[in-house]
Image 1 (tube, rainbow, N blue to C red):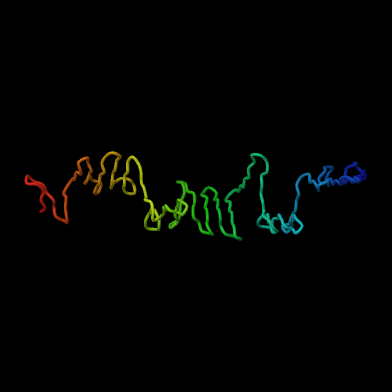
Image 2: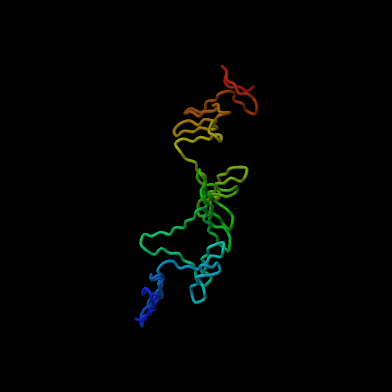
Length: 239
């Protein structure tokens, strides 16, 4: 072996082995050595200038640097930048102390993960869905669409809430053992329907028409063309 040493303590500075490794030391600790496949660093690899880059590839395709403000991993050659966990049952974790942003098309928002807040999903740079403390939220005019052709659509247009069945064929079904139409806080019922039972229509929360096995029961006055329908000993008459 050939080597260089500190004469006072026989401390190794560098060693050179023919047909073998070159090793560099710091305070007698090995920090760098050549290998048949390349080099191995023992400890930290430090580039202490903001303009310095770690560059990989024959055409400088992959670059890693800190530019004074941001830390960057830049892929500029052919192909793609791939981050892969190749082992069995291994995961990839992207972690930040605040937010995580995924952008496409040179700065177009795709996914925004906000610390202590929601996740936002975008289409062509426009927000379409976000998670909230209560579930998910859609902006005005954004539709939840179901079916191959978006046949069923649910949305709020800025004024009205809408459930739409859009094809020319088929129907919109609402099913259940019981069906209730009510106001926004469910304190007042407009219609109440029960399986194998009655359908009840209300006015201001009060029962007015109820279907029965024989027909209907009416509470109050029945009018036809604004004329009152009454019953008496001689039958039904209009006044």
